[in-house]
Length: 184
Image (cartoon, rainbow, N blue to C red; front, top):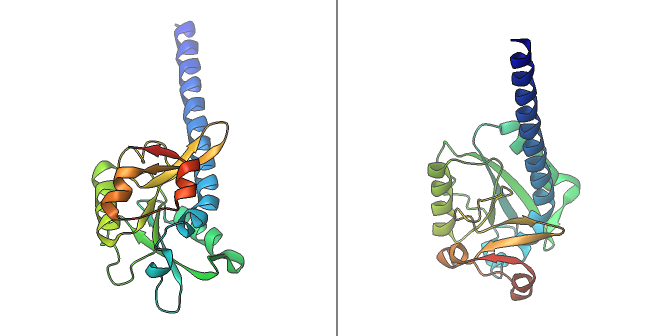
């Protein structure tokens, strides 16, 4: 019986280590993405037309349960007077469980957490209707309809969903598109 217990503990330990590695991998993807996100926002060909009054870049951070992670990511984007295209950044937080802001339309949206299918569909619909860039750091989200994410291999590249970009009427700099991974 003790050998069975030992085997169970070993299997549980291996499963836990896989979960920890996956969590660490997602954390790394989020860290990389938050540094790339402002640069991706700036290559929207209609970026300047989407600025709010006073030429401010409003970035929306959508979360489900982890508000503190959303606040932390917003702080990283907004710290030290960071700018996009010479324009001041204004960050905004939104829960995916509440109505998304119709009165203060962001230039772009960053998904803080992996969302379920219904939540993601709601955010995608909002981004498409408002013609706004939607970015997710999570593997598989570009294939689920998000406009842009990252591809991590031996290099990190932007990963664009061409159909989603067309549906939202979002145009990205052609040179960047040539250097990026694309999903049809």
